[in-house]
Image 1 (cartoon, rainbow, N blue to C red):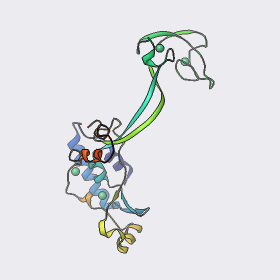
Image 2: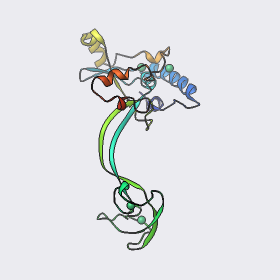
Image 3: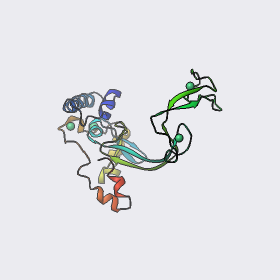
Image 4: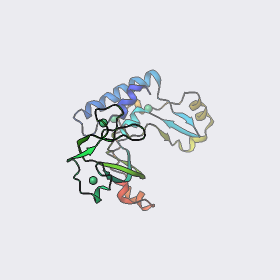
Length: 210
Ligand SMILES: [Zn+2]
Ligand SMILES: [Zn+2]
Ligand SMILES: [Zn+2]
Ligand SMILES: [Zn+2]
């Protein structure tokens, strides 16, 4: 896939006023791209892979990571729930240097905070002991570009067909989704997430942010 088209396919059009224009533009660009360069399905690790701009851009979901951490107060270093500082309020703090020579107020090496002088700095909560809990697929990821770039394609009983394998290996196997017509967006709304959660995962995590 060409770089520009790949970016367009990753862009988050949902809820945007130009959503329909962006959608039509992706179809036009993908149509031309398919004619000029094809939309190859490649064989890798015994799976058929596609980065089709139409399929990828119509899969409206992304990845959301669930992280757990403690938050420490930037003024006193205690856990936020254990100290009396109000986050966002300014407090006097003595400028210092870390072992790496970074300023303890602004975290930069070259700055205007001489060691030992007192400055008024707003208190903020700084995350420490960050633990990765889980990763979920959600319809509206907080980071809209945290999306799928490529996916494996199920060829069914044709998976081991020597003609298909030969074509995939020689760049002769192409996807036709780019040629239209549009089959609509996959918004995750018709996914039975309760079914997924019954198979072991916690339901609250699976439906996060939808
Ligand atoms: Zn395609
Ligand atoms: Zn504090
Ligand atoms: Zn500084
Ligand atoms: Zn479409």
